[in-house]
Image (cartoon, rainbow, N blue to C red):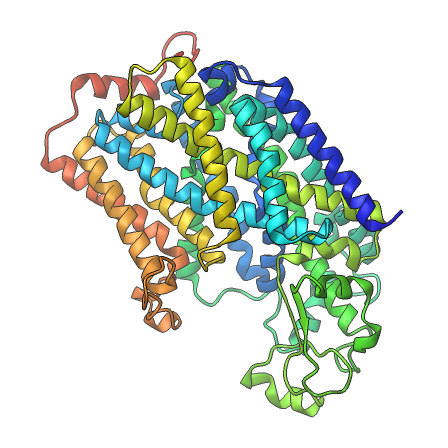
Length: 588
């Protein structure tokens, strides 16, 4: 059986399960569509939350980023995980106690203002749309590689599958589909990792294998990897970061952005009680930890496998001949994600850090420039092929990558559609709309959001990593502070909340636009020449934390200069923070 057939069987079987769940979970009311009737078991919700939260960035990109930057890129691990802890401890139980359907609805009612609700909807849509582009694009990349279709065709297939289970089932369909997707993605991620850990260290547990002895060299695996990358002119894999301020700010930006992204927050509206929201958060952390403890091992072992493929006899020996390159390199070359240029015309593949500091060593070895470039995102998807694992493992990783991308895309699309149908249409434009009409509007909004996300995936706005920076930065600078102040401060009023959100939103987006040039504005990248032009040396990827601080400061300053919130709002804040009675959440 060909590899293409195996891939098709695994991906097709997983899609059949998703669509069957959507048909079974057909939503018949707005309560089912928005919050699955608030009847999801905490364990199932924890699993669905884990799948919703672990996007294509976690499944596909994170190990690639760790492999490229080593310890310095561990900020992604710390930021995303820390953000979920913030969400679980400071937001989830209180938002569930409030008992609303959406994040803008909470912000609008807590700050007793339709204007604040509109601002929250705008921030939510911008953050969610920019984030969903990456998920749809990730699905297209996985399709183009494993099902041998074009990227655009892959995006269309992904959009059709999401349309079925998201538009038909809403939150109910998405929840139980995400349970299935978590099983698929975690199985796909851990099985290849176990195989590779056994091959390299004889230890079947990847997180332990990372700190075990490398079989071929007889040295600790990380020490072996450090030696190889050092010989090729790169910084040690375990080297410390050079800019600790940016490391702290970037980690904090990811934490606040993660806690402020609405597609994860709304998952905690789907359980019966406040206590269940806490249990859901705990179970989600357990399920997330399985992948996040495995990712550093996948990154280091994948990097080591790649380098020893190019230099099988050591970095001081001749590199791999191009004509003898393994099948996996040939396969990925056809996608354009691996490119090889024989600059010194010796028929071999030289890969090294082509910098002035290493040039003398390279010239002494007869190297005339780095000849191998590859997209870091291929590491997880190519790992089974690099390690010569069975074909069924490759099929499994294909299904897992698609599950990771589609699960988060569905959650983001639901957050967008519910904001449009519930917060804009029902909350402001037509408050008297019937439940049937609102459900129809929710489905139409979802369908439109899918079309827009697919189009943007096919025609990306010219930025890739910047999309994540923009999404997390906006969520950190606008949504997270409003939620925290709404729960823990009785003094912040509607004027302060609106001023803070607008200040955080615009300072963050303007800073990112100036330094990364992401808004189609000619000349906006004129400052994107390196860290020497950054304000106080702060990277645009880290500015979300600064935007959040500006939000907090402006909101409190304006609130102190204006009237206190009404007494009933202050009483409401206290009742949310200190629930009395049986603890059952307020029903909508």
